[in-house]
Amino acid sequence: MKKWLVLLLVLAGSLISAKAGYCEQFATVMVDPVTVSIALAKGETKMGVYTVTNNTDEKIQVTAEPRYWFMLDESPDFPIKSWLVLESTEFEIEPRAKKEVTYTVKLPEAAQGELAVMIAFRPKPKEGQAINVVFSVSLYATLIGTEKVECDVSAFKIWKFEDRDALGMKVAFKNTGNIHVKPMTEVYVRNMFDEALQKAQLPFGVPVYPGKTQEYDGAIYGFKLKPGLYKAVIVGEYANVGQKFEKTVYVVAGKGGKILSSSFTKPEDLQVEPGSKEDAVPAKVPQEEKPKASGTAQGRTMTIPHKQR
Image (cartoon, one colour):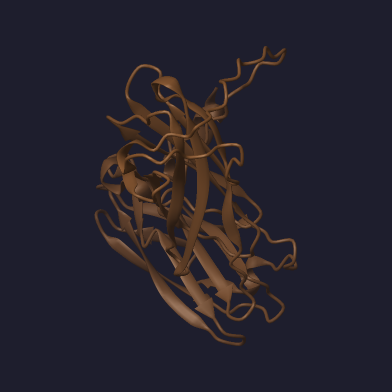
């Protein structure tokens, strides 16, 4: 039981950056900044400072331990100490005081894309103390000229809520590049005259890591579609690299606004009748398919997002 408690507390510590004000009452130490992104040329060295704050009325001892956050297949297994040096990995902080920890980064010439670590600042627990919150911060270091930004919308799902006039949606991004990206995303629901009917703003902050797929949920309340063919236009920018993206999904709505299908390709058997721009209705709407029984139960996995990292 104690092992699970410690594990949950470590995970909770990694969330402190997103809710620093809320977690301040639980954390022995706070660290600023919570995320650092550095771009370096070959042979270049850069330095920075972490400010560690003691939130207690007693002197505390802190250890700082960096660990790889993710590893790229094309990059050799570089020891962290070969490119990231912390001025202090063990230190004391007086009550309600601050300690500055300098770090130095110099990437190996054979590095590709991005090297990423999480640095855990761990206060030494008192004797018999069962609860110890660890504060973790992220550091991304990119070797200029080797980065590949290759991320795209890989899946889109849209549905109508059964108990209200509202649309839910889920957008998945797949990152096949070698650096992380942070999509800032909006979804516009448009009719076939390309007029915007409604817009959803998706949550921002959770990165898409290289080789991974990340999903983002959104909703539009107080709105439903009339039977017809529509477009969901997914637009935005990978905010940390300044690259824009756009993708269109064709959506077919049926009776009561229920979503019958969505696809990245336009259904060829649907012809939009000429009518008012507010009520564009296809001449043919496919019949809603009845769900098929399945012999397997679908489980649900809960993940704790590392926001603003």
